[in-house]
Structure formats: C-alpha cells, structure tokens
Image (tube, rainbow over all chains, first blue to last red; front, side, top):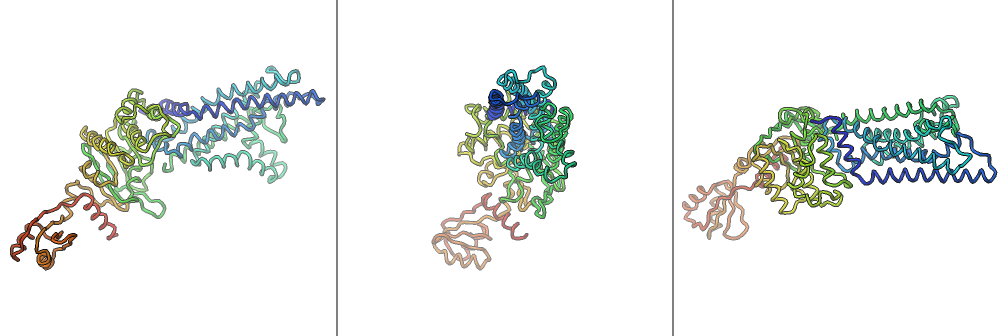
Amino acid sequence: MITFPRVVWAEWTKLVSLRSTWITLGAAAVLAVGLSGAIGYGVHHSVEGGEPPPALAEAVGAAFLPIDLFVLVFGVFGVLQMTGEYGSGLIRATLTAVPRRWPVTAAKAVVQVAVTLPVMAATALGSFLVCQAFLGDGGASLGDPGVPGAIVGAAFCPVLMGLLGLGAGTVIRHTAGAITTLVAGLFIIPLLLGPALPGDLEEDVMKYVPTVAGQAMYSVDGGGQPFDVLPPATSAAVMVGWAALLLAAGIVLLRRCDA
Amino acid sequence: MIEAQALTKRFGATVAVDRLSFTVKPGQVTGFLGPNGAGKSTTMRMILGLDHPSAGAATVNGRPYRDHAAPLRQVGALLEARSIHRGRTARDHLLALAHTHGIPASRVDEVLATVGLEPVARRRAGSFSLGMGQRLGIAAALLGDPAALILDEPVNGLDPDGVLWMRNLLKGLAADGRTVLVSSHLMSEMAVTAEHLVIIGRGRLLADTTVAELIARVVGTVLVRTPEATALRDALVAGRATVTSDEPGLLQVSGANAAQIGDLARRHGIALHELTPRRASLEEAYMELTRKAVEYQ
C-alpha cells in the first residue's frame, strides 16, 4: 500500500543518500557564516576609521547580506530535486512506483523543508552572532527589538525559496530551463519592473516580488531597502503564497502531462 | 493478465499507437515485437500510466495501473532507458523505491542477490556498466514480487552469460504463473524465450499468435541437391515454383513441398541426392509479416 508517509520516507532516502545534498547545503552554510563575519569585520574597520556606528537595522542587514545571494542556491537546490529526476530518467521509476504522482512533489516539499530548515536555522543564528561579534560594541544583540524575528525570517526565506524552486522545477522539468527561469524571475524581471512601472504602481508591485518580500522577512524596520516593503510576517505570507502557487501549478502539470 | 483495449496514442498529427487491442496471459513469456518506432515503448508506457492514452484503455490484473493500491506488487517494469540517479548507490536506489510500498530492506538485499549485484550494492550507479544498469533495472522490477512484468529490451547491453541468465529468469518467472511481456529486436533470442507473440507495426496489431503458428504461416523452402540441376529447375519453374541457387547442383525451392518435388523429379527421370524441407526461422517469419504490413499501408 502506498501511503503519504511512505512516499515521504522514500523521498527522504533519496535526498539524504546523495553526497551533493550535504556538499551543497554544508558549503552554503559555511560560506554564509564566513561572509557575515567578513562583512562584520569590514564594518567594524570603517567605524574605527571614523565612520558613524551602524544603526540597528544596518547591523542586522550586514549579518544577513549573504542570505540575499544564498537564496538562489536554495532555489536551484529545489529546482534540481525535480529536474534531476527528469534528467537521469529516474522520474519514470518514481512515477511508476507512485502513479498518482502528486504525493511525489508533496513529499519532496516536506523532505526539503525538513533538511533545509535546520541547516538554515543554524546558519541564520550563526551569521548573526559572528557578524555582531566582529562589530563589537556597535553590533546588535539577540534581545534588540525585531532581531529574533529577523533571524527566524533569515532561516525561513531560503527554505521558502527552495520550495519555490521545487515548484518551478516541477513546472518546467528541464534543469537549464528551470534555473534560467528562476534567475530571470528572481533577479532580472524585478530589475526591469522598476523602470517599466510608473512610480506609484512600482511601490505597490515591488513589495510582492519574491526577492523583495524575501529580504523583507529578515530586515528590521525595512532597513536597507530602496523602497517600501511589507512587514516581515506579511512578507513571509507573500513568499508562502508564491511557493504554494508554483507547487500547485507543478502538481497540476505533473498529473496531466506524459512523463 | 495485461489487457489493451483499442489503445490509441496521438502525438499531434502522428498516430503512434492505433486502436491496439491484445491480451497478455499469465504463465508464459509473451514477446512484444515490431520495427523501431512501431509504438512498443509508447504502449508499455501507457500500460504503466506514464503516458495518457488518447483513446482506449489498458488494464493490469483487471484495473488501470494507477488505480492499484500497491502497483509495484502488481507490475514490475524495466523501461528501455536507464532510470537511476548516477550519484546514488544501487541499494539506496532500490530502498527509496521499496519505501513507497513499505517493502522491507531485506527484500532489497534479496533482489540484489537475485540479479547478482550484491558485491556492488553500495557502489554509486554512475560507475555501472550498461549490463549492470540493466540488472539493477531488473532488481527494481522484481522488488514488489509482482504478478506481472513488463520489460523493454531487457537483454540490451548484456553479455552472453547475461543473455542466458535473462532467458532463464524470464522463463522461471512465467513458470511461476506470472504474466511476462518482453519487447526485443533480437529474433533469435525471442524464438527461444517467448511462446506467445504480439507483433505491431506503425502502431497497429499485425499478429497476436504463438511462435509456432507464426513460423508455420510462412511457407518454408526445400533444399534440393541434384546432378541435373538445370533440368529440374526448368521442370519446377514450369510447375510455377520459385527456384534460387547459391551453388551449382543445389536448389532452393519455394512454392512446392518436398513430396511434389520428389514426384516431379521421378516423372522427369531426374536423380535427387538430397531433399530437405526447411522451416522458416522466426526472423524470416517476422520479416515476411512486417514487410507485408509496410507494403499494404
């Protein structure tokens, strides 16, 4: 009998049995924490050179600057969970074992969260602590208002981006196509959207772009953004919405199309 | 039992499978034959629910594949292309498939032993040869101890030992009372493995018959050795038989049986040194059938 927990178990086995899973996530975590430390050191150096000490929002922003980039790593990681199966032909074995299909993508989502969330929780906390340690007196502390929320946001944002990638991979199926689409959707379209939209509308639309909403999840007072952003909780809801939308689209296509 | 009922698959304007109906019965190996592009793989994919039929239906043990609660226990499948992630070990690959159905790890080790992959079970599949990949595919197919097996070109890439192993495995599975559907383009292999044949061409059913019946359909030739070849040839051609000759004194006759040739020779006073009826091979019978199908399209 196929049950959803069994499909989750199967997907768990697949994910943890690949060396690349641990290399990708481990490297991303170590680099993110290391970069946060380097940024903290750099800011501290500027302050010693006479620059004004960073405000709370800037100190938190400095710690999570690497996350801005690493969301892409997680997005691509999500894409590959699905497109890798199409590339290797494994998808035929997978869908023969689970012919109703939807549990496959759903189970991948569950497993991906189970693996990436602990890694990101440690990374977010580590990035914050390492960066603030370098900042010294000018740094923020865990008890400062908005800081715990920002750390939680920094942990969840890449996880949600991974789910968004999983959805995109399920829709597009081809690795190169899906990654190109993801990069275009996350980084290029928002860049073009700015100039293309009239002023008022730009303000309204940009907050809902995944990259912007994602960053807002881990910033304090919308710090460091060139435009208005939604509050962290609302931004998180927007990100959940994007991920859910793409996953739902992926599952509809997965069920309908020939494998 | 595998049944196809008016199974049809269109890709745009192309009809890959055209109102195909056949039944694959348990207890025997059924060969699934046809030229490249005849629609064999597409038909197998439709039976397994990987491709959606444009019309018609396929059932396995009375139900569409995807309606089974535990499909791996109903059908084990090996599809032509490899379906393994290169970075995963053979054992982990099978474990992941087994977990979907709650099949225990002990069964994974059992099938690994059956296909002879135990020594490399913990090696990553990327390093596997074509033959080892095929064996891993067979292990996956056997995982659920299924009542039916669907194997697309299973002897591809196997060495002679592997081919013999596969032949005995398939016969053994059929002898257990399982339904075994095997596609192949190796006629000599099919002739010794399969009892029943489903032959398609351009997506249509050409024959659903036994190997013996198919061979019997094709008129065999008779080999005649005689010192008076020219005289016998003239007599045979006058009697509307077709005669070819590869070496002096040796005739290959079709359109007349051994008795008719013998009688004819006696009437003309021609001595015969050899008179051997030759049954057509499965390959000849198959070529004859598919050639006609192409001509009459």
